[in-house]
Image (tube, rainbow, N blue to C red; front, side):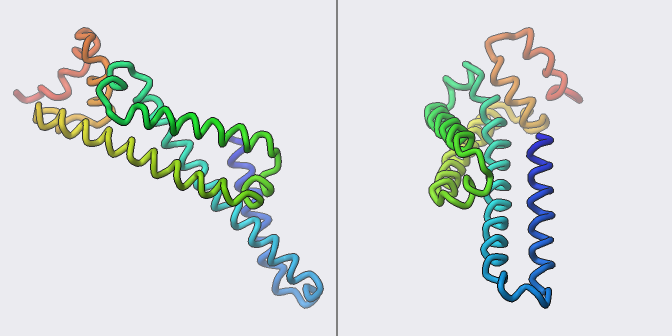
Length: 174
């Protein structure tokens, strides 16, 4: 995480430096090169921002689909596992490339794949939200607890001693 933050900060600094130098009187012969680098760095920032958003979403969904109980109940389980495999493939390609600019700017397919992956993960996330809504409709008291608590209750549904830890959260004031 620290490396990613440092990389993003360095890209931002370089982008600011390039933008600032474009107003220089002596930029003439380098103007086109500076524009190219500005485009490359802007693209890198956009791709890395999208990359981090997908990483956050796939980690969140991964923790949900890791539960055997939920994985059996959710229709989107297979789709998530396919998306997870695509994510792993993207990570291996990025690692093999080695250079951030080359990885983010050199391969248009990366941006397309990230967009497609995002669409798949959003379908999985909406499926989870629909599942939770069904559970809430079945027991309206579930509306009074957080989604993460409800997800935990659903994931350990066959282990009453673990569910009992959360019962007080939705039975208060009865």
